[in-house]
Image (tube, rainbow, N blue to C red; front, top):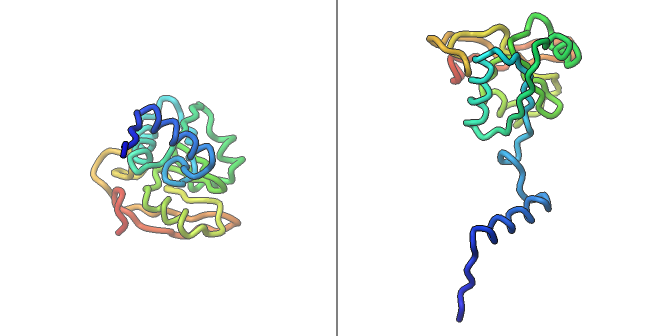
Amino acid sequence: MTVPTFSRRDMLAGLAVVAAAGHLTPAAGRPLLTVHKDPNCGCCGGWVEHLRAAGFEVAVRETSDLQPLKARLGVPDALASCHTAEMGRYVIEGHVPVRAIERLLGEQPDARGLAVPGMPLGSPGMGGAPEVYDVILFGAGRQERYGRYRGDREV
């Protein structure tokens, strides 16, 4: 009996067929995150790397004026940070840790999104000794703590 052999090209072609049929999705079925950031902001790039390291697919859109986008997406001024991401029906504002995003995807709450106001030291993408900060769930006139973190770990 002859055992069939497959080249790398055969394997890639087969995977392309399966993916085209909808059986494989990018980033383990997670939605794409489109990150809007200032082209001169280094910490935003650090946050993007935090997402990619966790297996998220990320598209980066650079703009020097994020205010119109934040207003259109319903990010309250008090929750603003240096970058804004769109992920399916949700908005992710600021240095939100991957664990909070994964929880959001798992629970699917009726909300506009998550935010980490400002730029807390040690949060994903930020340098410095990690400080404790809150991740806020917001939408429909409400804001509530969704988690408390030090660095990328819940406390």
